Image (cartoon, rainbow, N blue to C red; front, side):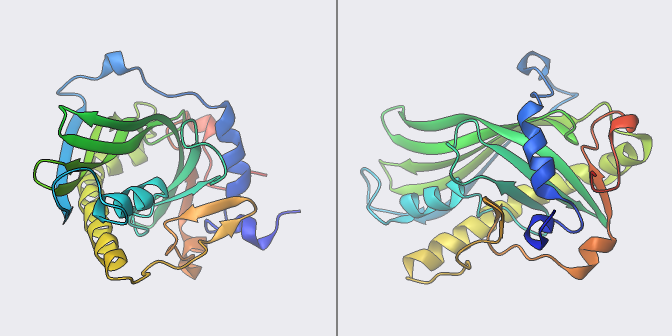
Length: 255
């Protein structure tokens, strides 16, 4: 029997859909990535300042890394995620709920890279990247990194991405993606940086702007933790794996 907690994403049995991600593969090859058919983006935003040198204990860099690891920077009005916090970060499957003009799209991603290094002897970098799985609206990879420039003390949030709409989208979804998708994508990047900067500043003041613990569905958590299910979510059009062929995509929760 499905418990109320399992219906954290509107009327969708999200836990069951999340479990299916284990059998899904990445839906593109990096050899395909080239302009102009792919969007290739890099967005850098200053989110704090420390003294020059290695990251400070409890400082902006450490606070940002904690929030980025937990996917707390994602704006819940655009993208929410369901994942197992006990699973290692590398290889973690995440079910994303993309909220798009009265429609809710459910797509899978997998963390395929964790970054923990010093670049050019000056930049201390931590972050991770996920790639899109079969059935996703898009194809590509997004990398989220927290960078401290140790020569100046500046702390940055850097989002780099290569992406394109999935070629198997149905006609209506593809039209909507062409009209609104790119605009929503750029707004997502901007809102991610705004939220991360605001939460880091709050943490440094000793405030706790995010609820604890986050919403849960079984052993999974929903991120960001200020995500709330609204009554209207049950009335929205639900599309599971919209990037699959029409015969394998459905607007209903799976049985």
